[in-house]
Length: 239
Length: 351
Image (cartoon, rainbow over all chains, first blue to last red):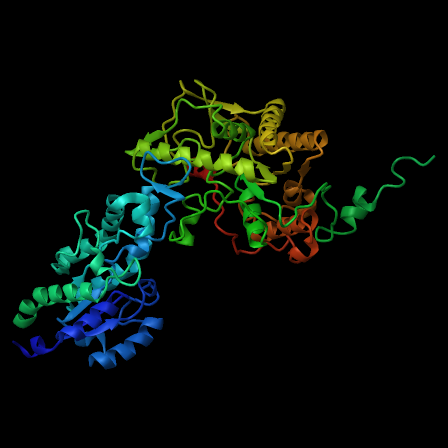
């Protein structure tokens, strides 16, 4: 193992990192870090990708300073070859943003509902994902990123599932994730997908549900962290 | 016995109402019968100038009806591109009386046009609102689903509104020879394909506009017997004319017909009011200074002046609502919000 390879992984990202972080501690995993904020905090303003050193700004910048102390780093650049992120792959915020009792997509549509076109959905996804995708692209370009964590699958209790069915929500989830998955695939960055956590329908099994209908619990976090370690340790060790 | 002019108010005389006051000092410009009240449910439609009315009413906290609001995650900068927030429903600009009438007939199931969608370059467009999806719909089925949903929303609007504000924009339109369906934009300009065998030019005359408007208002009043209607005429000149006349002359014809119909409908029905947005921009006293340099688009100062007058004279508590009306004489470079005029696409073809 090289000197860099001996350093622990650093994980940062959205609110899903809270239970991932708790699981890391429980497991004694060689990963530092945790959440920087809710997914809504990751915007073009807080993720500037202009010229100069890659940094976080605004409220994320403030939190990163605390985060950095805990993780034993001074800047993102210190995470070269050992950064793991949970960004842009958790879709509950997207499919949960519609009142599906009132809104419909696709065709044929229920004329009693307001139709939202495919193009509008794409525009929404682009607006939500573009800043995060651009930021992760910079992380890749700087040689920092070794792994990205997939968001938890939808839960059966999510109102969107009741309105659209599991297949409908999974289709929306897939569309939302696609820009980030395309980027990661282009650069060969692996995605940590927790195994054996879903039902036959593809929804998150109930024993992995968190406190709300968007997040997984610590048991789910353990599955994720185990996957991250399985994916990254070999390559981490080889660097 | 005194003659009829002896006891008229000062607003009836040019010298006291206009010459002495100057453009900024004019008051009681309109003859409002019933002022808008904050609790009234207000809906708007019409040509692009009507977008200003919708926007200002929303800004001033009126009970403005929007039956097709933008999805919450769609950035505000994209709302207008997708036809959200421009009017009370996502119908885009309704330029003509015929278009309004057919919108209501389609919403109530009384008219089903033969050409329900247009295909252009592998994308699908709604012929009756070709600009609400800038790149069209992904499929014919999706375009039809959106259309059905939209017409359902218009039906809901018709049932809910207390006040309908309609801005008459044009008399020129393009019509299907097959079933008389009228389009907001000539086929082939924003979408679709122009076919002289299937599409014809029509310049609506006074009788046609009056007949269309009377039918449209009758449909609305059947559903909402207490509905009030407020008519305005857009001061925005034609972008282009297919009449064969000079565009200046064609504009004068169009606006004259619309203004005359508005006057006639106001005279016929005590539940119809007219607000003179057209006069407040185009009258000689304002010297054309409410316009941008192209003398077509109304500058933000001109819109402020018109809407300040509207709020003051047509709305309860209007004096407090109306910001001091900026002078239309001082046209500044600052543009108003991105008013969407899809007929402006015609300008592209100007030689």
